[in-house]
Length: 303
Image (cartoon, rainbow, N blue to C red):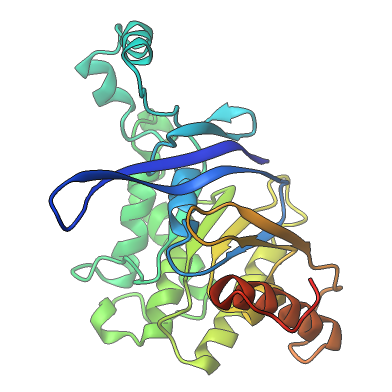
């Protein structure tokens, strides 16, 4: 379970005159996402969707509010006043460089993130990319708990096969197509067996046919986790409304900056879905009308 409570994010920026001014990217966003759900975030460019996703991942600290995963805090809000700073220092006064060294590589939450630009290491083969992720995930564990090299290689081959990359183990990313590189990123994310997968425009850089195939592969792989004790949550940022409706159990529509939740639209269409399903097309039109209204301040659709 992901719980976002009153999330806000404020940035200090320098304007054209060289003066500091504030920018609120995300404002008072609250939502709960149960296990085994796919949720898409859509909204105009610059409305804070990716910022919110990074806050979910713990890559940024919120200015206000908190994110909890299974009841555990992801990151505390940054101290914004002298009193909050003093309290922060008191709370963490016993944290030493030695303790930081021991705990820095141990993941606090089982989260994997997939970016638009693949974010795979170009100097590593497909196999090495996945083995490296497995090594990072096992860092901080006792020697007896760490998987052997042979076990990690076996696991890497298994997940490459799951995404259709069997036989590409020794290829470098430059030798793979865009769709194949994104499959590699997906295989790497799945290999660490996360409870949550966060995706930021994951299929935007591939052609339409490859995109549809990747969407179907994602649904298949996600579906395999639903009967397990740890069904995976997927939260995805996308600008493709049809993708959001086709994949998701719920579509979250963000308002223009500062990003707030404009609407939450459940997608109560049975799976497996057809892209030509009239109910899905009607939902797409509804979401698109909301986005168009925010961009143009006009809509022919009754919201």
